[in-house]
Length: 319
Image (tube, rainbow, N blue to C red):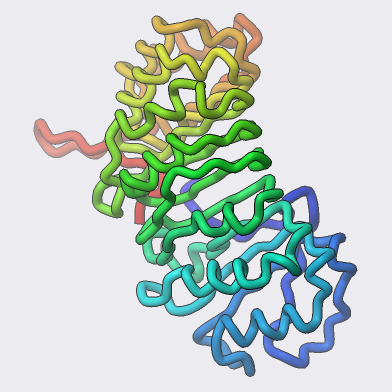
């Protein structure tokens, strides 16, 4: 759970990596049969000298009108190059990519760069350019901007980060996404840009902006107890089928709030993995909810670091 990795399937399609370097003798599949991965290695020996050159070669070789799913990996050097170059290229090709339904921006594995090194940008132009987009995943929070938008078709929205900026969190949660069924936020920690507060989640917790939401993941946070407490009385929960509060620093206080708040027995699944619950509280949560038919995912409790009276608890994905 603590490692951001490559994926093998996206948008219901197997992943196919567009060959790099140029001239690699690999037969290309039909455009709509795979999720295309485009990744420029700035440290490799390929003939492409930039992401723009790799993208130009891809758009010349593949009929973009048939592309349904697209994954963008590396676009430049960690720390320095932002995703603006990718956003600009995709928006410029929007007419040719009219069939695009699923987009993953920043599929960069830990072996290539830590998640906090990934330099994002304002990605809202992508939603404006692709009104039929149904699935958007973004990895990396540094420099991320997401002003509130309205999008009629988006069904899945996912952000993986070691720290989401407060303004981006507010923009996401205050967007009008009437078709949204799944929202996942790896919120992260202040040391890596996660300067959000609980109030920044209010738009999502209200339930009004995402009336079709069935899965909510508010994960990977140092304020997981505060999040659990807010969720315990949030209107959005009544319509959910699954809730994910994993990867954070959940303690008995947050679990108590969940158990004594609004009923969770309508959920099919509750994920609390990577938690700091005592064994007694973990058993209480498991017993109480599984007896009502809820699948409870917990795993073993994490051990906090202690030094005298100082206690440190850590979210799963930070740097």
